[in-house]
Image (cartoon, rainbow, N blue to C red; front, side):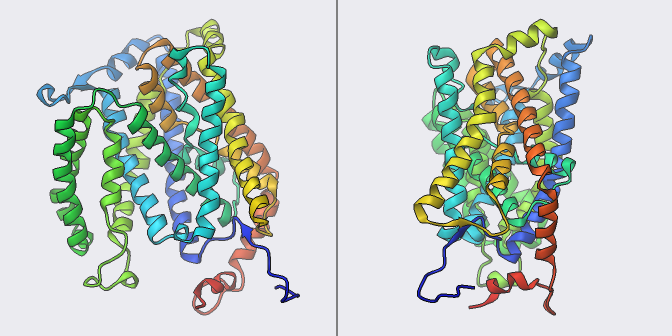
Length: 447
């Protein structure tokens, strides 16, 4: 409470989210925890298989081609995982980002400015760091976007392993960081990693996308209450949009984000208004997140993380490649420097302060955790150098090494704060009213 009314209270950053947002983010992260464990397991299996005496069978499986060639869809299983399954992952990114800005806490500028700016800093600084290390080689410079994204599933799996009782403010901050820099990463892919753009298929893709958008907006209640209708009507339109975007030369995962943006967040007045229940976006998120976290991302990790290291000499060769060095330095040092530095500069520029329950060591720990750039980094590595090339293999070794190092450092920092996190968690859960909402959140319900 401000004891001197003549002095305005200082604003704070990384505050607790609204009660509904805290519950929603908690549910998302519980699902991502399982997905993260599956992702790590799939990557470990791929690495072991790719470096075993029967490694040829792994690469034969990854490179096995299937699909309809006249539609340019005869792809290897690895390409199907990268172009097809990851479209489901980015569909969820589109749903999540739109919901945050339309109905979540990020619709308020005061809440959104810090995580968005931190995400931008966490993209720019690693990209510049990598570019400086590889500035003398145009060939390796193509990988500048590899260390830009955060893998939320892997990061949450690390939190689950160390048993961190992360406060709601930090959980929301981490999720927002990951979603925003995933969007920046997919924008980079669309602009810098698309080639030989074909205008015909791209323009044709607008037709099923427009029909999908119209139906989802007009009949949101119908598709929300009848899952079969969504699978039979909206899914074929989405697949058609994806196939045409793929044929146009733009990476097909962009279609996933566009389809996610097309789904309405708020229920229509005819459907009872926003208070009548979840909107179609939230319903789709519940339906597709298990598919993404449990199948799409682990399968992609399985086909992308399998790198034949070639023994000790091969590992040394990979880790001394400027590509791997740039990725490791950018993710382990550049990522936290960008996130922590941007957040600190914002507090100084706005004369704000951290929420009273947090310290800068907490933001530092979260920034280290954001250096786990796995799923999207592997995708960008393949787009930068081509699957199976030497630089591609070395970049993947760098991604794996950097993600492991970032996870260990984050676990060390955040693990030391677990006692404080338990105290904050207890504070957030006490003094529950008759309405079932902790008193600490009652301010969110006041007019």
